[in-house]
Every structure is written in structure tokens, then in C-alpha cells.
Image (cartoon, rainbow, N blue to C red; front, top):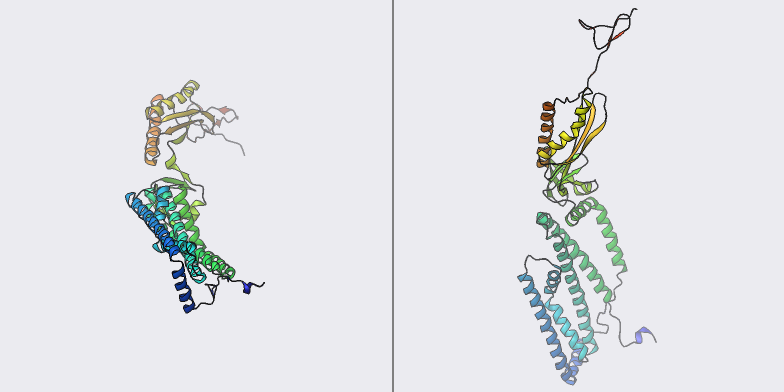
Length: 391
């Protein structure tokens, strides 16, 4: 038996109803169906009406819940907001499909209802998915009011991209259910998408980098970060670039992609800032006085409200005996750290002067010799000696 001998023909674009459409035949079959199956039709209509009003009540409840919880974005609210977007056309087609299924409708009418129902459910699912995706995006960023402006700018483009993708998929599914060969259409959309992506590669790269900053939150507006040799405070995160205010006052603008490619140090996340001072004293320093230096430095640090970490001798320099001091300032604000470092540094200078400890600086000592070559340390009595060689 061939496919043409089957009573039920497939749905196709040329003939989506599957049969040779005739208005007179359709009217005749519908009239006969109404007269012979009116009991089943009434029962099915009652069931369909019940389903319609139940769906309508669910939609009204969802809409009321969204109004009552305006501004709160949780998982429950996201899914209820999607339910609130249920269309009346979809509700009507669910009821119609129910009536047709229980009332032995004519084949032609059943096909018409089924085609329209298929279209309505695919479109409705796309609407639900769109609302859920956008709701989850909003929920992800709702707890960060500093990103509100950037998110509002991004949401316009995100909404456009999500809508375009979902309804393109929905259109393909509808055409596929109607019997259309969508292979070529999918291939065309794929090639077109690749072409658009390559043409706008830079724009999309910075856009997705901005979305990565919004969702992953490596830093936020008002925080101080460091990358390469730059230290600055975030002033604005845009779709294309991020603006920083350097500690020296100038505004720095860097693309989002370029910024995320770097190693970023978020200084705001530090509960404390560590500072290291290198201190050198002259070689003429008494060893007993040198042993007191770590304790002196500890007292200075603690008296200025910082946390002493360690201090001690680290090596012999060309012109100095070298010590190091490590201490923490308990603040994440750069200005507080800068002021604390300033106070401790000057306190060290004052204390060393009071204790008679001399800071070292690059020096040279000249040794002289007598005419007979005998070294004179450091200079002869009565004046400076000059070493002279006969020529």
C-alpha cells in the first residue's frame, strides 16, 4: 500500500490541513457532527470551559503575586512571572483541543484545531522560556545595586538576543511540524549567524566581557583594583569599556575584554594592607644598639594602631647594615593605608634621631698613603695626605 492510499495525509506547507479543502464539505461535515454528537460536544465544551477558566484563574493569581512582590526577584517569583505571561489565545486553544479530543470531531476540523494548537503551544513555550531566562538574569544581578545602570543598558540587548533566538527556534519548530524541510533554513541561519558574529566580533567580545563582570563580580563600582602598573578606583562599568580613576587623578578607560585578560588585584577585598620598609643603618652602629632596632620598630608600629608582623636583620649592604620591617594596616581604603604608612615612617625617623641611630646612605672613604707607600688611616695629622707616584 502506498502512502497516497492512507486516509490520513501528512501536514505540509502546501496543504497543512492534510486533505483537499472544500468549504461546502467542511460545512456539511460540521453540521452533521453537531447534530449527531451534541451531547458529547456539550460535555466536552463544559470541560474545555472549565480548563479555560482554571488557566485564567491561575494567570490572575500569578499576575497578582507579581504585583504584590514588585522588586523582589526570587526563583518562585521568576517562574510565577512566566505563568503570568500566559496568553488567552493559548488558553483558548487548550480548551478547543480538549473539546475536539472528546467529541469525535470531523477529521478536517480536528486538523485545523490541531495545527493552530501546535502553533500556539510552541509560541507560548517560547514566551515562558523568555520570561524565565530574563528573570534569572535579573535575579543574578538584583543584589548589586551598583550594577543597576550597566544592567539596564545590557538588558536591552540581552532581551533582544534572547527573543530573537527563542522565536527563531519556535518558527523552525512550527515549520517542521507543518512538514517543511527546515534543513536549508537552519544552515542559512547558521551561516548568517557566523557572518554577523565575525563582523561584530569586537563588540560582542566586549559585551560578553561586561556580562561576565556583572555576573562573576571580580570587582564593583567604587572598588580599587590594580593591574599591570595601574592602580585605580572603578567609576563606571559600561558595555564596551570600564572607567577607572587613578590614584594620581587621571581617568583611565580600558576595554572590558582587555581588562579581563589581565591579572587583576582587587584591593578592596583586603581586610588589611601589608607594608614593608627597608631600613639601613651605618656600619659604625654599636652591635648592642643594632639588636634593639626590631623592638624599637615594633613599639612604633603598635603605637600607631598598625599590626606588627616581623622585623630583623636581612643583610650587609655596600654602605649599610640592612633591616626589614613588615606591618599591616587594618583597612581596605587606600587613603587610610597611605596615611598610616606616612605616620609610621616619620615616627621611625624621629625615634632613630632620638636614639642616635644613623640612617646609612651611599658613602665613599678615601685612604691616603705617605710618600714611602705607608697607608695612613684615614688622614695624616695636620692635614690631608696625597699619595704621589714618581713617573
